[in-house]
Image 1 (cartoon, one colour):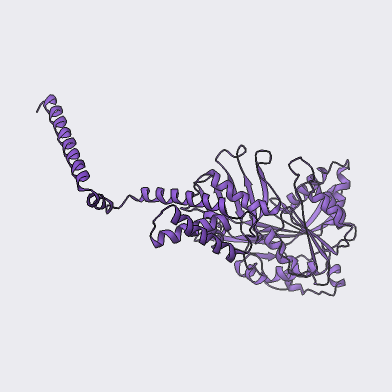
Image 2 (image 1 turned 135 degrees about the vertical axis):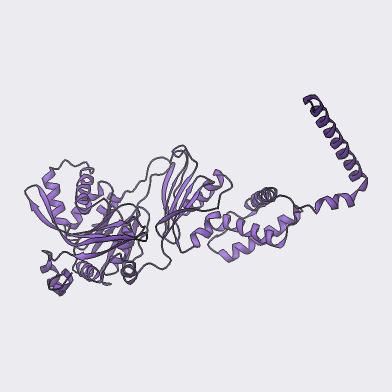
Amino acid sequence: MSLLNRIEKNQGGEKAKENKDSTTGEAGAKGGLGALQSRRVVPPSATTQRDKLSDIKNRVQNRLLAEIDPSMDVSRVSEVRSTIQELFEQVLSEENIILTRPEKHRLFEQIAADILGFGPLQPLLEDEEITEVMVNGAKNIYVERKGRLHRVPITFESDEHVTRIIDRIVAPMGRRIDESQPYVDARLPDGSRVNAVIPPLSLVGPVLTIRKFFKNPLTVEQLIQLGTLTDEAVAFLEACVKSRLNIVISGGTGSGKTTLLNILSAFIPSDERILTIENAAELQLRQEHVVTLESRPPNIEGKGEVTIRDLVVNALRMRPDRIIVGEIRDGAALDMLQAMNTGHDGSMTTAHSNAPRDTLARVETMALMAGIDLPQRAIREQIASAIDLIVHQERMRDGSRRVVNITEVTGMEGDIITMTDIFMFEQVGYEQGKVVGRLRPTGLRPKFMDKLEASGIHLPPSIFGIGRKR
């Protein structure tokens, strides 16, 4: 058959199809209601159904947000949920929206999560296996499970939807996020740490990072089971805390510094007055006499800022027995050193670093950021005198968190701060995707043993690996 004949044949077939469609349309028009009903039994595609539910959700939610009393106390969840349920049913009725029972239930739960909770993130925050949630724009959400990152099949409707959830998180704390302040640190009611960045700083849309806290904080026994610490190391650290040694917990991002600080703070005697100072209050101390202070960013006029450094200076006037700073990252390091050197023994803080030696270098650099013209040796003498112990933690390649060094700061030799490792992590292999190793004593006793004994604590030599086989 020639090309021309094939074209003519195809055109003839298309005309016949058009005539058939036209006839069907006329018949459908003549068929009236019966024909319409027969067409409705054809199920829509999954995409069309999702779009329909999304459109209904937006309409209903906008009506609800417009009609709900803004002064309503959202902390009274059951009351507010009941009010939302009534308004929800009313809106569906007025809009003449017909849904199946499962669709109605799902739609209501999504809307309630947006108004009362954190929208699509709510189930992720309730999943106890998830330790971190990362939102990279509206359509890309990742979670961390057992130290590994996974993408989840959950999305927001739009970037505006993400921004609305961020506003819900930061507003109760009196903080804001907008073009003039496009990033913010905050926390959830349970203490989980939140960081948000929006355009123009972020080029992928609003970015939200939530580091979850355990509803039931980890215990020392659980850390031992996980391999983060050993019995000997725990006994040694408990003695150090009770003997009022100054401790810095160091490590990389997500290595578990704050969790370890929480656990070590549990060893502080209950009859002491403790002051905690943080950017966003995360520490969960169990003692009764705890005063929690939180820094404050500047207001929209650029005034009213209260920094960690301001709080450390003010804390010295509040008669603390111990000062715990969630993290030092700037000139507050100098004030923290001063506090440790002026009678506030037993203070603790965390710092980002790659190793114990790097921790001292970072503290020195941060002290210089205070803007006070001090000679390098004077700062190093302050560090050597103030800090007794560095506990360094790492997130290993298998996702586990391990304490890899417990190091004593022993003093100065010339211009160099001297250090001694009391415990070190010894890796013996990597099997089935797991790091195999153990935190072992080095066989050396710390020089501050006299401080422990003066507190009535006598540790057996075996804790330091003396007199027993490795």
